[in-house]
Length: 123
Image (cartoon, rainbow, N blue to C red; front, side, top):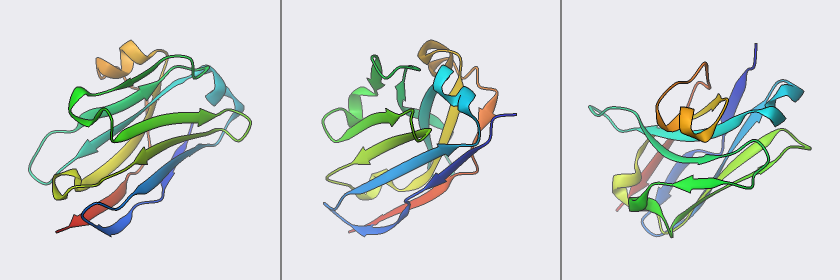
């Protein structure tokens, strides 16, 4: 059972940056596509970014492209979400998830979820 743990969330001000990390419990992580999702209060959870098992293919939602970047280090079983120029509307709980492919992540076919980390951006 693949277990995912997010870290790096916190309270920041408008325009600042954060880097979230998703660390996995098993080496099988290197065979999985990984995504970041976020859920704002009262809203549905939606995808933010995804990365293929080898890091060669990445996806970031259009709205966040240019400010958010996803990357991974399979040697440390970690996927990162770099978030720059943060805005109050970026506030929410950010979840890490793993599946077979980035297409499955985008289709919300997801067997593995982390517990989430809170990001709050104040104005």
